[in-house]
Image 1 (cartoon, rainbow, N blue to C red):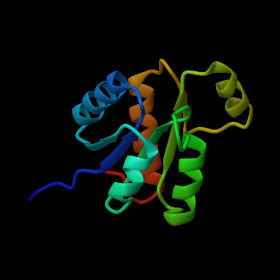
Image 2: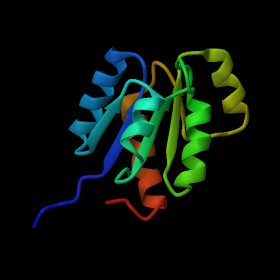
Image 3: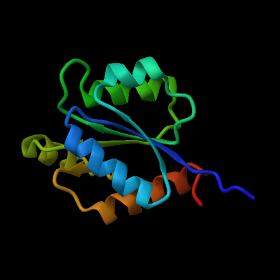
Image 4: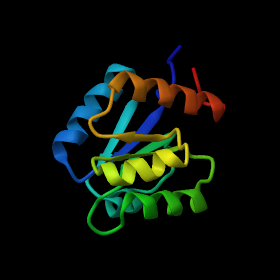
Amino acid sequence: MTQHKYVVAVVDDDPRLLESLEELLESASYAVRSFSSAAALIRAGLAGLDLLITDVGMPGLDGFALRDLVNRERPELPVFLITGRHEIAEQIRARAVESFFCKPFDGQALLAAIARALTQQGRGR
């Protein structure tokens, strides 16, 4: 019997981070769809995704705007925000947002948060 692989989309304009996250997520048996911009993800569509990880600071549509768009179109889809901008990080942490990670982040902590989010959405293993 084939086990379903959960599909995690990653959006970041830094190719090194995309590659690193792909390796981390694939090592945890997730299927990964990587995009270098929010526009690329939107063109590909949101169907079939189980979770989205997006950088906050990107050219064009930023991570906050992408999260808002996803929340309108697929409100059940968990969205994780990541950023290297520590001033943004402090503002978000002050709001006690659990699905937020500041670069560099602990990969195991991210994987644990993903597993929790999928479980809460009824998609966990």
